[in-house]
Amino acid sequence: MNKKHTLTIILFLIVTLLFVSACKEAITEPPADMDNRNFFPNTDGSYFFYNVAVFDSTGQIHSGARKSYLQSDTTLQQTPYQVRIDSLELNGIISVSNSYLRKSANGVFAYFDTTGVSAIVPDSLRNLLTISTEYRLLYFPLSINQTWPVYNVSIDLGISRIDVVKISADVIEKDLITIAFRDTSITKEVFKIQYDMTIITGLDLTTETYKAFAWIAEDIGFYKWEGDAELLSFFLGTTVYPEGTVVVEQLSGFGFP
Image (cartoon, rainbow, N blue to C red; front, top):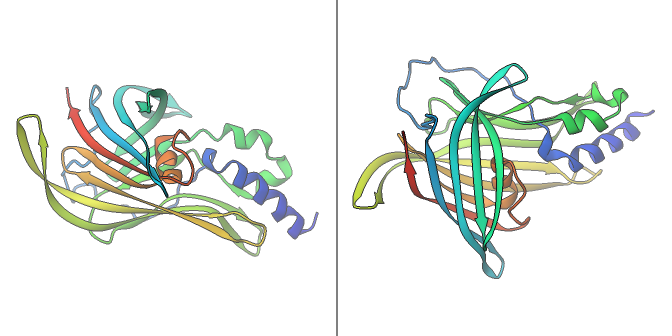
């Protein structure tokens, strides 16, 4: 089989299954003692509630709420993870999904099940793919202009390497915000993170791009998400948000045990 024919088959398989494969990329890890601030509280029993709005070119088309709970632990492929249960209600329709996270001094990682990809990709092509079971959601310590690779699916053709799916992150702003809940208000430092996704969608290597922003607050975690549905669905681990829309998730309540 010539390389052009091989590339055609691989691109078709990867684009079809882009949301079930992931890989880690090596980056220089910061010293663990540089910054002790907590931007991702993850005690079992913690919960986070978000108001949700979905927009298309005509305006808002869906509204609802997402309830996210951190509960218990599990082990996947000999790696310990914390279970996150998300209950998403949009226009009265409820969907529930589980995701699996692990937090270290150097960041937050999420598990991806790549069983489906491994099962259908022929043995002769499998060794051309870079596939792993994690993507990197956060990189610690957070700082302005910090960048990191989040997710990448690559094809190695020997003399060249093609990134079919690539997600990267960039910390673009730092600010103080005042958050009001019930009868109290708190002021917290917040970092704004820009996530960018590029996908090869055609055999001529044409691409589509998606963008999303996350605001993450000290001692609280993710305070707000806003961006293309494709990226927010990726991080949520479900495709419940309609493609081609823009989603806004705004924290409305939270609690720690």
